[in-house]
Image (cartoon, rainbow, N blue to C red; front, side, top):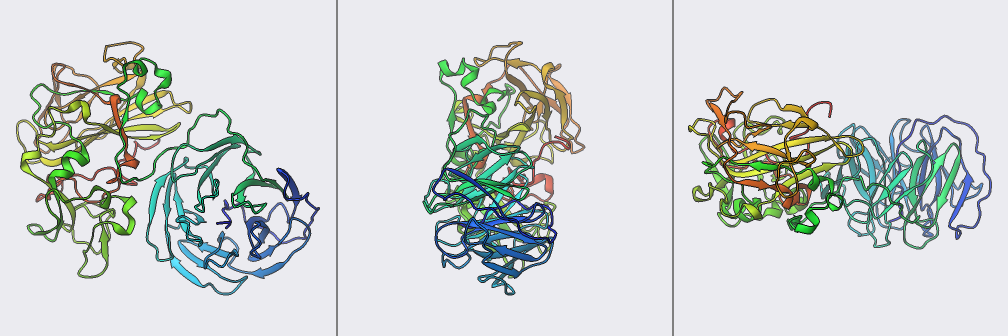
Amino acid sequence: MRGIRIVVVAAAVVSSFFVVPAPASAVDEFSFVYGNPTDRPVMGDWNGDGIDTPGVVRGDHWYLSNTFNATVDYSFAYGIAGDKLVVGDWNGDGTDTPGVVRGHYWFLSNSFGGTGDYIFGYGNDSDLAIVGDWDGNGTDTPAVIRGDEWWLSNDFSGGVATFFKYGIAGDKFIAGDWDADGVDSPGAVRNASWYLSNVFGGTGDFIFVYGLASDTPFAGDFDNDFADTYGVFRGATWYVRNRHQPSTPLPPDVSPGVPDYGEPVEDYSNAEASQLLAVMPVWARYAPEVRLHPNEQNWPARVSAHFLANAELKWSTSRFTSFTQAGFGQVEPRRLGLGSATQSYWTLGCTGFRPFRAWELTRPYESGRAGCLGSTQGYFLNLRDSARPGEPGNLANVPVYYEFLSGRYVQYYFFYANDNASPANVADHEGDWERIIIRLHSDNTPWQVAYYRHNCQPETKDWPAMPKVDNNGNASGTGTHLVVWSALGTHGSWQDVGDGSREHCSPLGIGEDKLSNAGARWRTWRRMVNVFQAPWYGFGGGWGERGLLTFTTGPLGPFPGKKTPPAGW
């Protein structure tokens, strides 16, 4: 779709137009002057001729042109000064019309002016607003960007259809149909470096430098070839390109990730490739070797193939009661995660007040949930007791789940089917998500490491001092893989083995963590899964049966806004 994809700039002031003619739109690049330096630019197909042309907004007044010359074809008031601006084809008639976002309320009009044909709430007040045709049906619908998280909707109901990560917080964001397939996809502009993707996520199909860091980027179809390209607004001058520039060898540092119905494993076990660090991506290069205790009885496990295949999905109704939504062996991973949108599992959780989706935050006892839920209400996964030991004979096939944000951090999630401290204590629970996070410099070299243990503040250490191994698991001063010791039963992550017994910070009767060099070694770089591509990513319930207390209930797993790096990273 040819609707506007803009980044909001400062509020405008009223003054006159200055316009110079532009060359024919068939050329690869041209420029023209329209509006004033303090205007806010918009771009859209105002007359349905297949070509996007400029407009500016000054306070609450819109001035739109059907050409790249001096004509002002539409002049009207819509919204108020300070609104976020969006433009799109809301009704599929082939023309773009105005919209504004005020706080988290959207006001979209099918005409030039009016009071709004679609009025609804979507996102948070602080979100960036953007629109596009996300499903190829010919209409533009809303999306919000929160940091690096994109939340797309395919209608005006306020429901989330797709979630993914792209770019980094602070980027200028655009969207467009870069490959003429009828579906809009994301773009990020960082300083003067552009990253345009043909999918929801990825690392960028078009990567190049264009314009200045201070420019305002825009996108549109300027020659009616059904593909969107790009340009920048600088002062009152518009610079437009009709062809994509060839990609340049820039670091592909747009965070990858798109929910998928599969769980693709990245395999770095090839002996030849594993010896060449240059061919290993950042997340594999620094993935740790996890050393398990020789007496470990609760091993790492594959999420879908082991845990979910041996679990049932239940909704807790009270401290002692629940009902089953999917029985043992019937849980569909894709219906747990954000990618399932309206196809997810759901239930009426607040006495018929509204349905709750499996990807909403509902874990019993969890803070930050919807106010209508009782403390014990919510989704949880109940694992067969026989599956609690995990996969002790299959460690080579159990992946680590990772999250990578270029120039910021890489996070590694270790999943165990069960937590069972030795000696046994009241904090035992099914499902156990453990993690470490490596803080990165802007060039993606390691800086610090944060180690996490149950109910403890993360312990942060400088990267150079930490023990490491090479790609073959041999101790090495130049190795890039951290050694992480996994505590017996609790699986807390430690940075050194010490004398094999380490005091735990928790007051819950866990006692001392037991560590050892004598057990199995999990070389996590050999099998990896991007957590955002896992079909269950974003499940908001408990990964394990509901207990009588919060710390005896299965934990919350990877979920947007949860399990973030330490403050300041």
